[in-house]
Length: 98
Ligand SMILES: [Zn+2]
Image 1 (spheres, protein in one colour):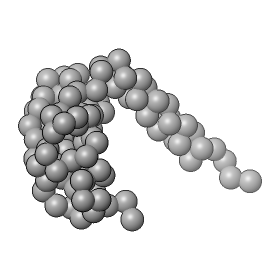
Image 2 (image 1 turned 90 degrees about the horizontal axis):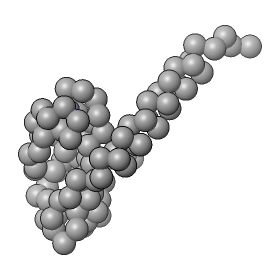
Image 3 (image 1 turned 90 degrees about the vertical axis):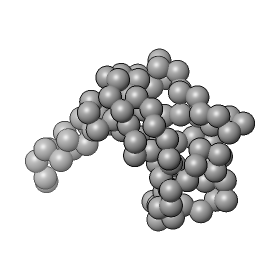
Image 4 (image 1 turned 180 degrees about the horizontal axis):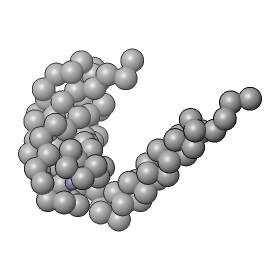
């Protein structure tokens, strides 16, 4: 269904330093994704958001109840792939139909 839960957490974007507050997760510990407001301790694996200021993908891994920012190198790689996919989708849309 593509549902998710929100995560109550405040952190600055790793790229531009602006605050991010609308974190989302699909890995709630009880397995349900129902647009609830969860605490970090209720998250099993990770949570993430796209920075509303610069568009960068920010993602935290949760280990033993503690959030850890994914390595910036990994995030840059995810961001690069996302950009390429968006570009590809645009090109497909722009291509003339047969
Ligand atoms: Zn940012």
